[in-house]
Image (cartoon, chains in turn cyan, red, brown):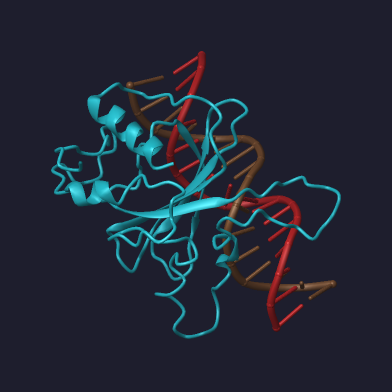
Amino acid sequence: MEKYPILFPVQQSSSSSTSFPQTSEMLGSTHVFGSLHGGNSSGLLGLKDFEGRGMSPQGDGAHHMKSLASSMENETRPDKKKEKKVRRPRYAFQTRSQVDILDDGYRWRKYGQKAVKNNKFPRSYYRCTHQGCNVKKQVQRLSRDESIVVTTYEGMHSHPIEKPNDNFEDILNQMQIYSNF
DNA sequence: CGCGTTTGACCGGCGC
DNA sequence: GCGCCGGTCAAACGCG
């Protein structure tokens, strides 16, 4: 199935790499959504795994990624009447890519970027620009292995994908997304 | 011009 | 209570 010479729909992101050596392996480990049961493929990890390990061998400091470790937890807030912020489950997966921006068919608007402790690369915060859709995602590159990009999705899209171009590759990618649901 | 990015300030939660 | 830290806001800027 992944024998197609499909490349990623990274058309506009010129990230210092004109010729991508990316192979089907990379595609195989991408776009797996929600099915993080035990698929420890070469590049897929659960959320709790995140990157909490490569860091902090010194024990102290920087293990505040509890927010990221909230995988399928439904946020059983022992708190209160007011649910202003409904923390929805997050889905994180790693991707072997040389570009940070993975085009998944949706249109995202970046709204923040913060430096990550124990990581030389910053983390970018994106939000779906569709009206009424507050799906968020954050993209982060591991400093441990800079060829790995961790993408964390939060929320579910309730609107059709708006694809900026109708390449055959894009359609195939979308099919991959859906089939993995 | 409209839309997206950049970037420092701001905010709320949690640990000490 | 204070300070750190992760996340978000928003004004200014850039680009097509």
